[in-house]
Length: 267
Image (cartoon, rainbow, N blue to C red):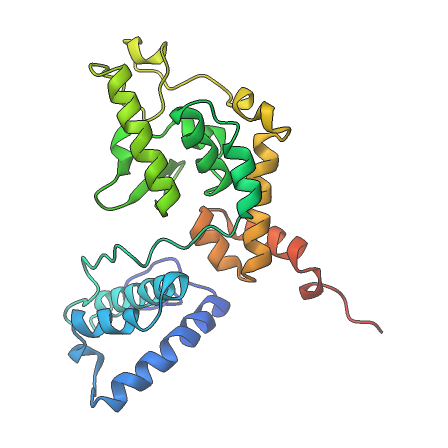
């Protein structure tokens, strides 16, 4: 995990490894109690049962930790097969949005069509930026797997759709197809100009007009969403996974939400 094995790779911090151990410890103890003597004996069913002991974000954390640990063990030749390979759980990747329901309802009440409603949800629930949304491709949205891929320079961020986002995404796809059934523009979000643009350019709007009736700006709503989550879950890794932000950005939100964590002790 530290990147110092047979195959060189980016190592994880000791803090991350400590968090991994916090998740792994009860699982390993359970496997030992069941008579398992080696991680080579672990099957995909064992992994599924371990994840099924939790729901929501804790279940997703178990999935991520087990996947990364078994991947590292397989890479180092400690095990011969990875029991987490190809394992996808439809229900564990959709943490409920911890954004105040009255605020979200208030924002969505200003939506005049399915396009605006979908954009508002992407910002207010998933904290996407204008650049993120402009470059979303139609193929990035996979309703069958209930996920949306956000492509950013050098990386990609996967959003697992909650019920509200799924409904809004489905409604927008129906509206998109109804209005422009023969468009060849590959972008998910299009308008009457880009739908017929033969250069397949992304939508050019800044989205500011959509949020103006709410009395709040899009950057404010996006930042508030991440800040709300930081108040709810005091964990920078959770913010990094949920919003695809950097460790430095996550720590800034955690510090703002929980200043006691970084407050200096009195002399």
